[in-house]
Amino acid sequence: MSLGIPPLFSTATKLLKNTSFLKNTCNNLLGLTIKPSFSASSFSISGCCCNYRNTLSSPSTMEINKIRGIKSDDKYSKELDVAVRVVQMACSLCQRVQESLVSKRNEQVKSKDDNSPVTVADWSVQATVSWVLCECFGRENLSIIAEEDVEALSRADAVGLLESVVKAVNECLAEAPKYGLKGPNGSLVTSEVLEAISRCNSSGASRGRHWVLDPVDGTLGFVRGDQYAVALAMIEDGEVVIGVLGCPNYPMKKEWLKYHHRDYQEMSKLSPSSSESWNKGCVMYAKRGSGEAWMQPLVHQTENLVWPNSAREIRVSAIDDPALATFCEPVEKANSSHSFTAGLAQSVGLRTQPLRVYSMVKYAAIARGDAEIFMKFARAGYKEKIWDHAAGVVIIQEAGGMVTDAGGRPLDFSKGIFLEGLDRGIIACSGSALLDKIVRAVDLSWDSSNL
Ligand SMILES: Nc1ncnc2c1ncn2[C@@H]1O[C@H](COP(=O)(O)OS(=O)(=O)O)[C@@H](OP(=O)(O)O)[C@H]1O
Ligand SMILES: [Mg+2]
Ligand SMILES: [Mg+2]
Ligand SMILES: [Mg+2]
Image (tube, rainbow, N blue to C red; front, side, top):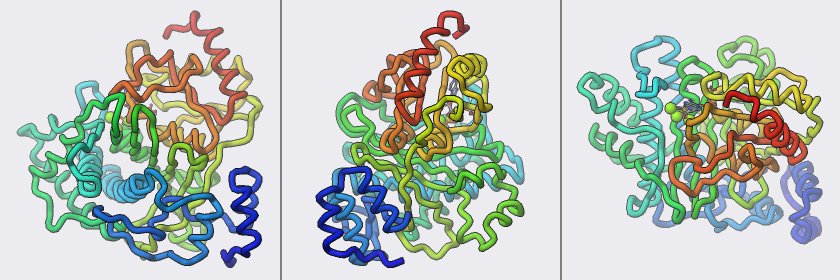
């Protein structure tokens, strides 16, 4: 299908560009593979390590951006562009590590002080993202808040583990040019990798710019060969302004979700035309205030890369009847009370079984319309960390959904590492009707809960 835009149509669409009717009409007319706003092909950035290629700078691409009211110098475009590219790289790293973990079940999984797991992938992604952000935005004043530190990695008994991390980081950074980013001139040495990890030790602040990274969210899912996410966000003056979620095992199409990602034979029946059309994972992203959220397939290292590859807009579900809605929650009872949410589900009239999924893939499922509700009620005393939520929140909001605490108030990302002042739990919904019902139901049942 040609993407050329007749001039009259173009003028009319500019006048009406903010109406959702028009947006949908344009999307339908143009097909679903419209490039995202920050498309690197239509501009170049000076003073940045990004090595943008002019692979798709056809007039129609520019025209599409104009129709959608997007200027190539939009605020945060460069940050979002780099973030999507580095998350793509990180997903590829994770896939390599997960395959080796699942096949060998080796000793490269460690337990942290709170008994939660950490792997080669967690440290390696953190080092890689940190290195790329430093190269692209300069290390002066660069604030990164991330989950991992180097303590366990620097112990005498962790020499083998550290070697694996250094190797994974260098393999990943060597791929940077394939993602339009500049890699290091030579391999990073161990001290540089450790430095890149430990540089992400900012504790944030209510003012200024802070990158927020969960290198592997849902590490338990990751080590079990299941769902996990790479989550990168940027906060400015206490607000999440960009969010990127890499979901390497979350297929582009909902109907593929029911097949476990290792059921390759089953998947190929659905997608007979090969790996090119079969997309096992995806990356979702959004920019605050754009009113849009996007999804693109994972780029695999073996593919012939044409960047930026196709992306399509995602929206939350239109379902507002609880009887038809699906809710998702953490897999582990220890992370969220299943009995409390079961009571809530019953009282608001949810009928389907909960979709229990590891990681921020739950946020991705809401943003993409695969489910309508996400609830998390951690045990009393547990303080939610911003890296477990920041990227998912902005993606859901820009896709048309809502995320609040159980009192119906927005989450506060301005107080450093923790979501301070969080009222009881977190609720994300595709719309206000469902959210209001759940908030009311929490109030009614809270006092009789054990939380
Ligand atoms: N006790 C407790 N209560 C609540 N939350 C906790 C708790 N312990 C850990 N965490 C954080 O939960 C993150 C994983 O959340 P999930 O939704 O993936 O949970 S689950 O594995 O599906 O049960 C997990 O993120 P990762 O460590 O990145 O995997 C933790 O930050
Ligand atoms: Mg963890
Ligand atoms: Mg996490
Ligand atoms: Mg993590």
